Image: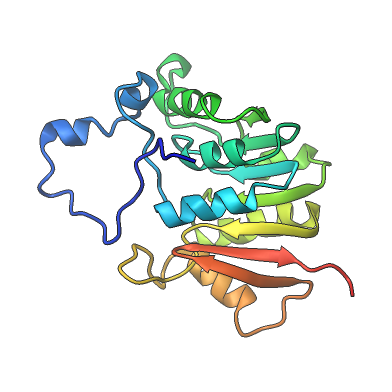
Length: 219
């Protein structure tokens, strides 16, 4: 898939020398207006990994949408008869008509793929209360506090089907990366999946800051 987003570059470029216009251009209004591409919060390698894991699932859930760059990858890669559930409260704007982050995300995702989209404008811990469907692929990229990551995991992982995959973003250290040992996703993944038994879950791949966990099928 040809890139239509602006990826994070490794190593990260300093913002100290960015012009005032360049900083202003990062406002989501400009993505909504089509004056720039969506700003990804992930690398191109992570984007390509999401595409690979989204190619066969019929039910995908993403927690934390931002400008919709990762959701674009998921929707374009997934099966046409699949459904992509996008969970984000988009709560930073008190005036809905001026919530340009939400509008930018909707614009971006509409432009990518043909799978059905279901927007869930809610915090993940509220959205899960009415959830009943099995999930083939779950991307956890919402609240990055360690306790919030663990809550998302404990509340949402029971719905992941056998052979299904959960991806944690910002969940590992990598060369020239932006994460640190203090990151909530890093702390949770290290504590819960590394050096300890986490049956029936196992780490199957790690790409930059992404960690992919699979629910193993019974032998």
